[in-house]
Image (cartoon, rainbow, N blue to C red; front, side, top):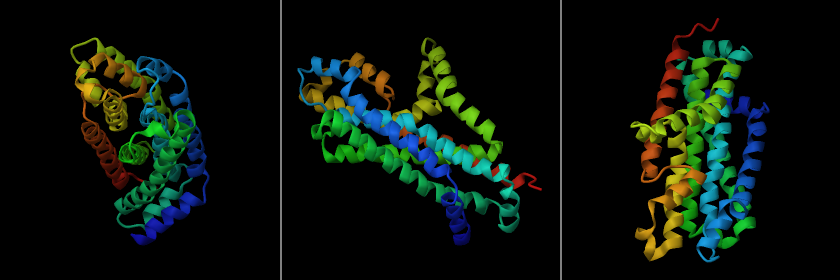
Length: 283
């Protein structure tokens, strides 16, 4: 197993994929951290709260995470489909026994790369937030750690989901189109359609909503608590929903619930990838 893991790291660092996808992660994280604290809804919220220093960095860290998770999913999916596109899957599966060990090695290797993505997202979103909101924009250090850690978890889970999905479809083109189509278009349409029906509660259990909630359902209550203080119980549901509409997540759904839901999706795709890889003809 150690040999397979080392081989996966060699594959990763001798190709351009990992750092090519890391570039937009860094750029988007910084822009979300800076732009989110400096522009948009933040000026309105400052006016409503009398211009006080606000922990807006907590919110924009969740915003940046929700933007960049798609690149983590693409990283995982393309890592697996690339084996089939370049015909390296044949040699890999024939020399590794059992086949499941190959996927296991990839899961371990790409979890480590996903940690790099997650840490980069947290650091660059924080740097942008420091420029936009100053050092008072992140609340307490423990809060920054919790939100940053939740973001890292979200990125790791998206990477694992992408690996499993890539193992199932094997085509790089299909993997990219389906992931981007779902994240950017399809779920929004489904969520909008359900919002006006009796099934609106299911929206919190969709993959994208669950992923967003891992960070946003943690950061929004922290933000409200810091701003409202002892008056927090008096904060209206409308205020929460306004913040969630901008920064993701949903009112009243716990962040750990979102984590469990999305971890379930990731587990299903990893299991599906393992099953299809173990049975597929690779000659």
